[in-house]
Image 1 (cartoon, rainbow, N blue to C red):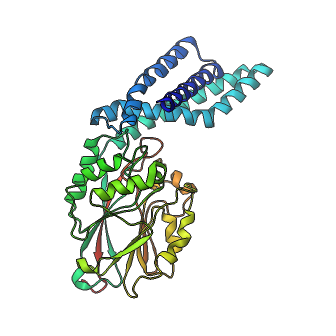
Image 2: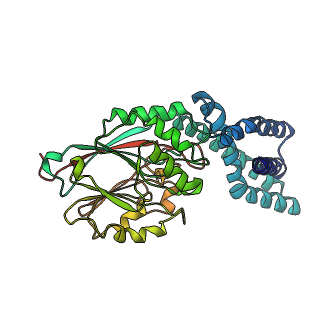
Image 3: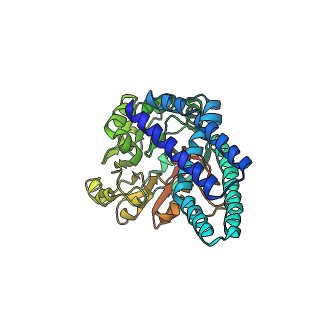
Length: 386
């Protein structure tokens, strides 16, 4: 309880600091200052509700998530970004303008910053609306060297980065479960970052996928946020609900009727803005795979693809990047481009393929810009199939 009280005090303190810098630094007229203060009060009123949700691994209703929880979360996260990136510029401009009597500098800074903040608020509303939409289904046909012709057409569904927490509703997760079930997978894989803040959210995720019972099984791996939440507890809850956790191991699917090996590795949780240091162990992980069997590797970060060259890995499925989540329009780059060579989509190198999934959830900012969420369906084809 005291930890939540301290955290709430920190959030409120940062909001007060942001309001002060905005009003004093830009020398806002009294009407604008009062409007800003009213907005700060309004968006902080639901804080007790948000902490109540988090404390008990609860989830809001669909409309509460869309109209209260995520907007308030976005408000707080936006002002944290403001303090990190814009506040120093405002303070410097106000101090310099006051010292040298450059009123035009303060006035120009006010118009520029208010325009910038207004644009960002419009984009935030757009992104919140996008986050409330169901994930897109991306369908990709992949030729798998070594797959028997009679097994051609296997349907593999990848769900990645749902980030189940107090900011999304059970109705949204059930909608995702319905989408996955409707794709009629032969094999379901979840490539990490299943939950945030409380491992009990793994039970919610698994329950919403309970109707999905592929003949080749349901598998999942640990992502970096699962590490932060408690990887052993998350894994235990997923396994209790019938998922096979692949934790630095591989399994043959031959007995179930598919000439495939499925391998998976835990994310270490280290260096989350770039490659995972644990990826250097991929050759060791696959060292005893029977010769001639094609391997599908589940690795949370797309950088694992760089470690598969020369190995029998025909398909690497990853997530982590959310495709950038906040991207420039018209297919422009996003935040993930700063740390990853392959942040989103399909990449090929010889007979090896990587797919970096945009994810079904959000991380950090609870919205998406020009980067919709997705569930990926892979139709696995034999080289000899027509």
